[in-house]
Amino acid sequence: MQLADIISLLGGVALFLFGMTLMGDGLKKVAGNQLELVLYRLSNTPLKGVLLGAGVTAVIQSSSATSIMVVGFVNSGMMKLEQAVTVIEGALIGTSITGWIICLSSISGSGWISLLSTSTLSAVIAIIGILLRMFTKSQQKHHVGDIMLGFSVLMYGMQAMSGSVAPLKESPAFISLLTTFSNPVIGILVGTAFTAILQSASAACGILQALSMTGAVTFDVAYPVLMGIAIGAAVPVLLSALGAKLEGRQTAWMYLIFETAAAVLCAVVYYGINAIVPLGLSGMIMNPVSIALVNTAFRVFSVIALVPFNKYLLRVSRALIKPSGEEVSANDAFARLEERFLIHPPLAVEQSRLTTNDMAKATKSNFLAALELMDNFSEAGYNKVEANENLIDSYEDKIGTYLMRLSAQELSTEQNEVATKVLHTLTDFERIADHAMNIADVAKEMHEKKQQFSEAARKDLAVEIAAVKEIIELSFRSFTSNNIDLAYHVEPLEERIDVLTDKIKLHHTDRLKRGECTLDLGFALNDLLTDLERISDHCSNLALAVIELGKDEIDPHDYVIQLKEKHSHNFDEYYAEYAERYNV
Image (cartoon, rainbow, N blue to C red; front, side, top):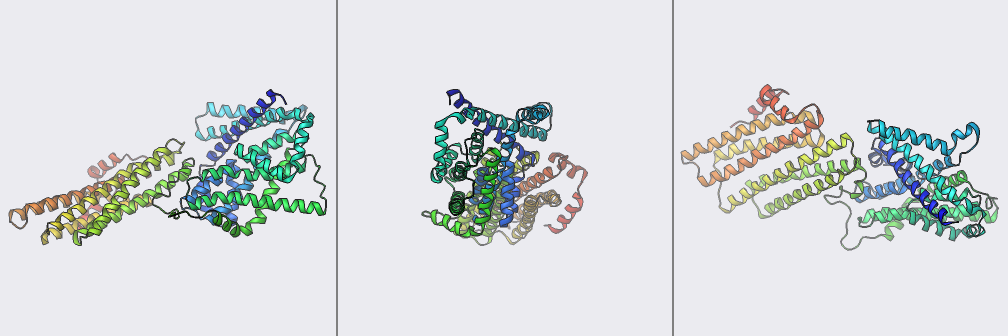
């Protein structure tokens, strides 16, 4: 084998890997970018897990990618380890589809059959693909073009590999080397090491299929190498789990444990039976089709045979990967913001939305806790409000940073809208939490000075506080459930709170003139009213974000103008209802 042949082989591998990636990404995008969410939401039974794992992997052309995604699910607490195992097992079946695609590269002939040859098909598909990429504006057609170009590049890469290894069929040294691979242990080790270097089972299998075109690869050589390829594919999954939490690492190791168990089982079954009753397969000359068939049969048999023993394989994983020190399960506040999801925008956007909903719950809880301090102040309660306010600040930082990193990915229009809505509302939640902290500060100051509002002031405040509680409930519920009808109630109530604030301030001025209140308490009351009114303003912003996302034709500023000038969207009806309910 000359240096030029080696360079051609490496170039073929590079084209093969690039084509496979391009085709897989295109297929995933054409599928609506929802594969990851489907995998997460529907893999709740072993059968569904296996089928969905196989289906998703067949589309994205990588069992490692699917398994890394599942590691992320488990690491973020979205999926149980028991649920993840079946998805991984399905992925091991799905990855064999690439071998069947590669079989198309062996099509050849003369006359009209030459039109179906690999070179002709690849050229035609590449031409169609580049036309779709260059002369259409539809993003969907661009993705179809990527699929076609990826397929063509993959086929050309396969042809380059096949052509570069063709001289080896005349090489005694190569034939002698292949003969050593018929030793099961050596064959498995070679397949494992080769795949670990390439970090792609599909590429390793493709190279084996290319070598089979020399006519020198027998069943005894191909079988152990294919088993080794399956084990070696665990390397990128294990690398992805570095730094993961306990369950994430256990999931990654399940991939290696399952593939090792599958290789041992299939080796014992085949070599054991063959030793007793010769099956006549040992000297069979392999070709791309037979290798694809053996690879698929090996994986399907392994899954069928080992699925009933999943609980024992899980025990092995948990025994090997134990918690260290104070390590706990993945249940912290930011567990959903899993870095492994950034390359899967649907998941990343969904997890950002859910984490923002958690932020909303924490903000509402902290507001209520701060109000409680006005009547029953305690240092422990104050410290809890302060700690939660710091947590909410962290929510803003973590979610905002995560979404900014996500923006580097290609997002669909819908995903971009949701991400933008979340980004715009983070500040509102954080500012509501700040005002809640201000309320806690007012309560602390009044407690230290042993001050109390007058009975009249307390009655006025009770009305405004009740109104602010309702606007928080309405706006937060409309945000978390994306309910536009609830959002339309917010602006009228915000207007009513503005009126209440002005009235209560006037009432305080009157009491001050009559000597029924002090200037010092007036400062506290003014601070408290300002915080409550500002909270209602931020609730209005939240409602506008929901309306803007749900009604693309409505500009939020135009909407406010319509409400106040034209009194649209039942504004008068809702305002009258709140004016009757909240009056001082």
